[in-house]
Image (cartoon, rainbow, N blue to C red; front, side, top):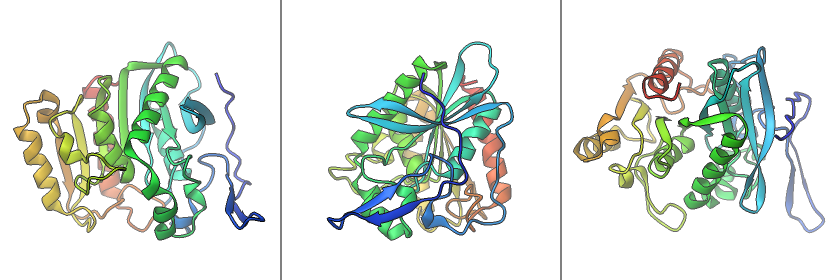
Length: 297
């Protein structure tokens, strides 16, 4: 097993230019700070403590690289643990995603948040969302992500995880990837997508979108959306609902949607102004119940 790297709050992102003019980044310990593009943090940012947990950065062999992952687990556990993959927003595995992983660990899970942007750059270091999308996020191919998630699941098997009890959850960009991965991996028992985009263009990076795999889900999906989300029109949610209901696949038919009327996009992101406490708390409660009811815990 890899050595856990503890969180170090004193580390801060640094950027510079090499002699050749190429931008270089000094990466902080995974999950130790918020991404630069989301600063300053809101006052309501949640801080989940480490009491009773082992948590920090490890690495997973993923193709030709060692992929950083943030891992959180109970310090004392009898036997193998149920596994939850936590898939980040476009900001990567920054402090908020690490905190979500610790929340799952407090509930008895082995929670793993892989840094799926590692080949393209450090998403935490870019100061604007526009630059982050251009330089990193929009260069990440879906097939690469799916292979990296497979590698993460394989690592979990070798490191105390019971992947017969495998769940996956993701936020925004990660919500979309949650849909796609659930259609690929037959081991997934349950999944929860938070405000993940459902439709979009199909190209070399995005061969399919969630609407294209509506009848291929291997596990029932709980989807959580904001009624005030201007980036994910509610008509696309209705379109997906109809597609799932018409599918002959039992997991698709068992999937459910919750739309919170007063919530914006990223309503669970407690470090941002979009945070909507009532919706976030209800979504978290429903997420835990969904995993429990469908055999993840």
